[in-house]
Length: 117
Image: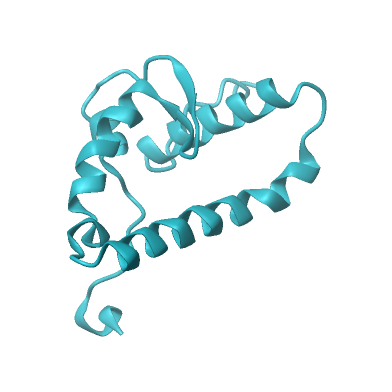
């Protein structure tokens, strides 16, 4: 409905913005209930959280329900990918996450070291 007014879905976050402006990602961390992240993305999570309209809901029941639904939805999104993991699960997930974040920060323009062949 909003696309009729020139507004399109945008999956950017503040961690990507910080990365675009040159802030290094820092170490990889796994935060309970929030999942994979980097230090830069943890810092970027704060403005993302505060700017989320759900944060400003007055009814705590509605707010917690929507956050829980978002968490379950995110988990289900990644559940299908678990069948592709081979070898060391931690290393596989970490490398895949870091490569995906690099891709998102660079808006799909990533140096490929195999282009020379």
